[in-house]
Structures are given as C-alpha cells and as structure tokens.
Length: 272
Image 1 (cartoon, rainbow, N blue to C red):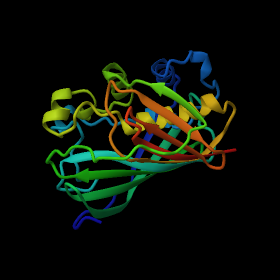
Image 2 (cartoon, rainbow, N blue to C red; image 1 turned 90 degrees about the vertical axis):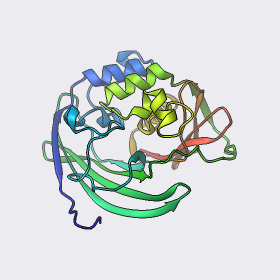
Image 3 (tube, one colour; image 1 turned 135 degrees about the vertical axis):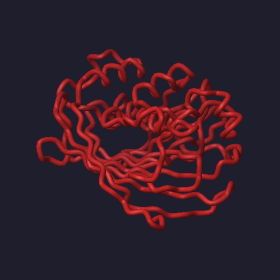
Image 4 (spheres, helix red, strand yellow; image 1 turned 30 degrees about the vertical axis):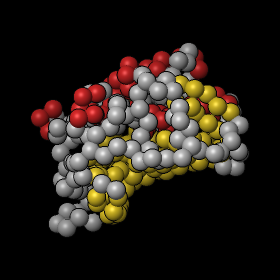
C-alpha cells in the first residue's frame, strides 16, 4: 500500500428505483418493457451508489481529490481498467441496498509513458442482509504527459453474433450524466485532445461493458449471468462504429472492436 496511507471502508446506501433503468433503456434503444420488472439487469448496479463529492472537491480532470478513500497517488490521469463481478442474488427494484467498499491492492508497473499504478477496489452489495454482488474494480493511474494509443493488430477471433453501435458525443454525454461521471475525456473534446493526448472523446469502459452484457442478453434471452470479468485493452473513441462480438458458451467470450478490427474491451461471462 502507499506509504503513510491506510485503506478505509466506505459504506453507501441507495434505493434501487426504476428511474435510472428507464433512462438506460432509452440510451440502449430498448422499450422500457424490455427490462425486468422485479430486479436489476446485470451491471445496472453501476447506476446507483453514485459519487456526491462537492464541486469544489473536483480536480482539473473532473475526478474527486484523492487521499481519503483512494490513495494519494502522484499521477494525474485515472482510468477504469477492468474488473470482475460475481452475481450471488438478484437486486430487487425499489429495494434499499448497502454497498461496502475498500481498496484491497495497490501495485506499480512500468508502461510506455512511465510508471503505472494499479488500484483494486472490492465492493460488496447486500439487500436485507443478503449478499447480492461481489465485485473487484481495477483502476489505473498514469503520468500526465499525453501519449497516443498503442498500435494494435486486428483481432482474429471469429464471432458467433455481432452487432454494431455508434457511441456518438450525445450517447457519451447521456451515459456520463446517468452515472454522474465528470471525467472530461468523455465530453470535453478539447481537453481529451490537448491535455490527455487522445485523438477524440473516449468511450467509457463501463459503457462498453454494459453494451457487451446487453448484447449477450439480446442474443441469449433468459440467461442468468453469474460471473462477468472484463478488461480494457485500448481506448475506443466517439463517433466510430463499435462492433459488439460474442462467441462460445462456457464461458462466453465477448469483445468490442473498432473499424480497424482492433479490440477495445474483452470479457468472459458465465451464465446459468
């Protein structure tokens, strides 16, 4: 762990009301009736327990100051790199839920742009004393100098089912609003290009993950997701076709590719 810093558990409560689900269904071009009436669809818990930091407590990139829940890492750039989710029990709509979170690991690796610091957060969500979700999220912190995405070869995997979506600037703005995510790389094109060195606005990692799960449920209706592991491979950018791919059964392989055939996010899903 970071010298002089000790992890502290954070606890948040929320009521799992239907409103955010209805707005997510609009973003994904579903009729509201598509969504389950009794419980949240997989990964929809990301629409709850949202940050509520004061505006004055945000840094230049839109993220909150570090040093309390997150370690005081001396690296200005932060990204959600991946994670693992286990679904133990349903999260009923309108239920009161508790999420307990704590940092469980901090490690450093050397990347192209310098030292990278990886932070893993463990979340547990329960309803009425029953554990519903166990999750680990991996964040990566990197130096401030901008660097272009790495050159990648096209993904050679063969998809059993594919679907194209185009996350334009409006979709990125709506998802940022839906998750109260103020990270400027998703809506401030000048900031994304001139400060963080990206060629355009960056598609949220969680948005890609949720689109992949949505693709799975469209292709395999009635499936019950029990485990989902995902990893960001390289950034995907606004206004470019994002192809959602699915292959196999046990586990299912899912991945996104850009118009050049390069992978943005890859995942494995286990269903009952």
